[in-house]
Image 1 (cartoon, rainbow, N blue to C red):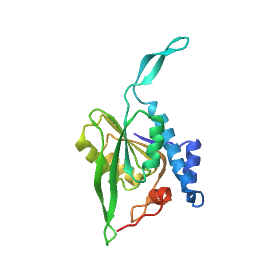
Image 2 (tube, one colour; image 1 turned 45 degrees about the horizontal axis):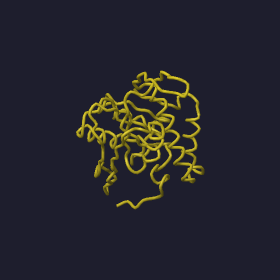
Image 3 (spheres, rainbow, N blue to C red; image 1 turned 45 degrees about the vertical axis):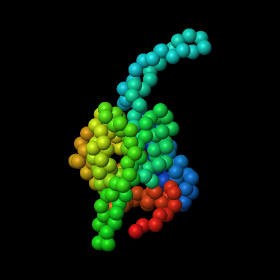
Image 4 (cartoon, rainbow, N blue to C red; image 1 turned 180 degrees about the vertical axis):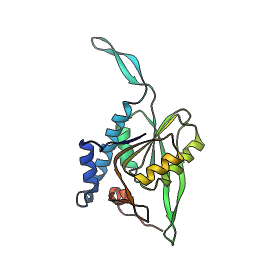
Length: 216
């Protein structure tokens, strides 16, 4: 399933608007915090669909029967842009295990690019719920390769993608290559440039969050 949390107005669409705004996004701390808040809200919404169990909890005046999350997820993020979004998810799934993937676009002189994965650190993924955070689901190529790489490491029970902004082209690629994956996003745009950037999008999320990088 694909869940667009800006389909109806909420604070989510306000934060997405600030992420897009060319003046507001110059405040790196606010940019990171807005990504973090989007991760928090998506974590809350996602938790409604997760398995729970009743547990007895002692209180100063007795015992309360409470509904508790049955299984802790694995939170995976694509470095470096995904870190603030990952932190938002971790703020709510605070007992989760974590995984980190270094996936990036290696550009060629003709304008094309390929996805390189150079580093993965993850726990046992067998029968786990895996939540992958990447602020921009553009072409979908890096996420598909990341999912395939993680599946080679283990056999997750569920896989979810969390993005601030997704493009319909990237969504379709993920649905075609990995049809069982659920996609949660703050907004969906329809256009992609020849270089694989979302329009209107917001620019380079990694640069806006952490500063410009050298690109070879």
